[in-house]
Amino acid sequence: MRAPALLAMLIMTACAPLPGVVSDFNGSSVKIRQETIANVPGVTPQIEEEAARICATAKKKAEYASTLSAPSKEYAEHLFLCL
Image (cartoon, rainbow, N blue to C red; front, side, top):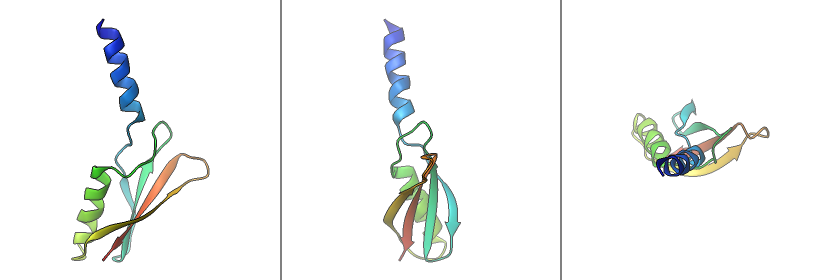
């Protein structure tokens, strides 16, 4: 009985968006790259927190602007403006 519950939990975890890493920051915007080979792209609270942390280094607040997916679907890049 435990195996089906564990399998269901693993499947749900595999579909959850992964946290991202900063790929670009220029003081006015920050891009956060999220690997999406086995996951659905999406802005997570962790990605929003990382964007806020990076923009705060320039004494600004992060505001979500857009998401671009790579043609290969290997990653998505989330753009936040630092305002």
